[in-house]
Image (cartoon, rainbow, N blue to C red; front, side, top):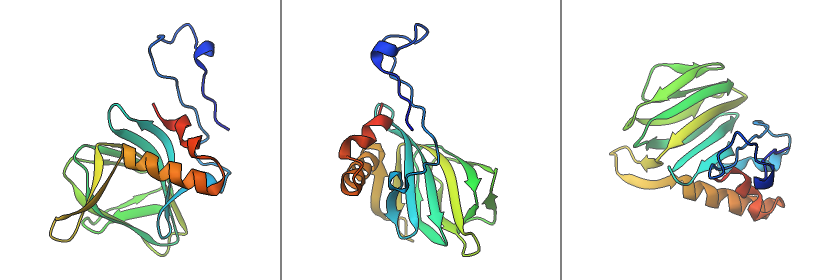
Length: 170
């Protein structure tokens, strides 16, 4: 259940020009909240900051899966809630409870191995995900606005309504 304060319910401690807070159950019971992104890969939006180009979400990979090779122009912070994952380009594995910092310009391919039934990681991303091929050539991108569009389309199709995503946008 979402708890979002209404402007008339704004506490006296909150500045009148401040955006409203977002309080969500992070791992939802309703499977429709998860937005498909690729085979076995989905995300659950938590927050979309359209002024800074930032978003926070849970990334979920079931069974094994790959998130295409990409880089970020700004830092990324991650926290593994369940399971484990790694980058093809590194020799470490992020396991349950791990914090991961990705510096700007880091190119990587996220992989969840077959022995992991389900992986869920919280990510805080600013800027974009800039998808690249093996030679570093751009093959696409995602930013806060494309993520919102993906959510809006999915929520309209699954019966939650296109405006369901609005609860996460500030």
